[in-house]
Structures are given as structure tokens and as C-alpha cells.
Length: 296
Ligand code: SF4
Image: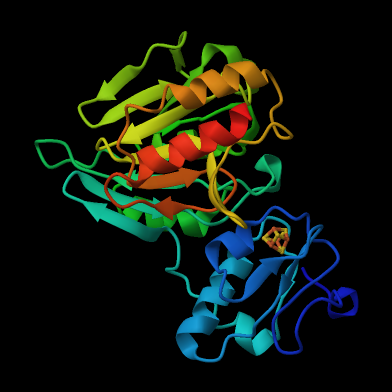
């Protein structure tokens, strides 16, 4: 629970604040950049919400925070929406993509995602990408959308509460062999660097580098869940692959970035960092820009 006496000086005056327990995971400003922003070592409230819709967004950022470092008065907390997460990101003919919120300290606040889709016979066949922190409230919301059939774990850092989610929904889990010691209970293994079709519209793309067993998932040919391999940066704007945050092999990570040239990504949904949507042709340009920068 955030404490008013620990309120950081960087916050603008008003109801919402970030306190000193912030771990600088980025969840709040990625989800609600209209009110939260990084300071360099923590987050802070840079603008207070001014109407009901903006207050709802700030309350959801508060709910998503993995360490309860965001505070607000009790009367506002009582208005926290029960139906905020999963939050719709985009709707495609093949299914909908949602942000799960409820970030976990165990994954340093990594984003997790839910694809809601149906089989030909109409039964739900939903996919969870990485794990939110366990929440019975979120589980009820996901159950109402058809539960979870499969869980794709992008890499060792973001497995968080995968067992609780798998148990709750009887979901099968996939993880790359090289990172499987982080989730030994996972029922399925991804091997090597060859792409693997999980279903007609689900393609696993191994991207070793950040960790030896990092994988991305391409949904419907256009939505790339990239784990910590790649994300969108805002200052300057553009794709980011981070040598500083590469835990295994930077040269391998560069090769993994190069192997994404043939994709036509329209949504990039990472574990950490900003999400981004691309217009047609923009992915190719941005990826080449990134590669030129990384090879300089
Ligand atoms: S979500 Fe919480 S821990 Fe993460 S940056 Fe925001 S205030 Fe800090």
C-alpha cells in the first residue's frame, strides 16, 4: 500500500502520487502515459486526471502496479473498476488482443497479454502470453472470456505465477528448452531456432539473445509479442534492443533481430517498454533503422 508520507517530490500536487517503494518497472507510464512518466530512477505523476475517464485510467495503472507504489485517497480507490483488465488492445478477424494488467513483481512488472479466439467449432481457444500476477478477480474476468487453453512463456524472466494460471484453467504451457529450468512444470518445449507453428495463426519465433531461450509469438501474421527481445522507445522514438539488458549473448540477439526482417508487424507488444502500432511498411523501415544503429 502506497504511503502518503513516502510521496516522491517529483509528483505534481493532487490526488494520485507515486511513493518511494516504486521499482521503476515502467508499467504505469506504459499503460497510462497521460498521467505517469519516468524520472530516471522511479516513476512519478506528471499530470493529475481531470475527468472520470482519465481517473479510471489512472486507477487501472494503480491496480496494475506490481508493488502498490501508487497511492490515491480512499474515496477514489473505491472507484477502481472491476472490469478494467484484460483491456482490449486490438480486434482482428482472427481474435482480440488484450493487455492483462496486474503486473507481477516476480517478472519486474512485465506486461502479459491475452489473445481471445475461437476454434472452427466455436469453442474458445485463448492464449496467455507470459504471466500476470495471480488475481482471482482477473481470473474471473478471463473465465468470462473463455478461460485460457495455452500459455506461451517468452523467456525465463517473465514466468511469474504461471502455475497458478495453468492450474486455474487447465492450460498447457510452452517454453523454450534453454529457459525451461525457470518453469520445469511446463508441459511443452520449443527447441532450436526454427520457427514453430502452434496453430494456423500462432507462430513461435525463437529470438535467442536476451536469454538463451527467448521466443516471440506472432499472432495472425501481424501481432508480435516480443518478450524482452525488442520494444518501442519514445525518446527517441523507435525500436529498441538493449545491450545493457542482454543477459546472455548480444551477437545472438543481433542475429535474432535480423531474422525478423521478413515479418510485417502491425503491433509490437513487448514484456517491457512501450507497445506500438505500425502502419503498413513502417516495420521494415524501423527495423532497418534499428539495425543500422546497432551495427554502428
Ligand atoms: S507501476 Fe509501480 S513500480 Fe512500476 S514504475 Fe509505476 S509506480 Fe513504479
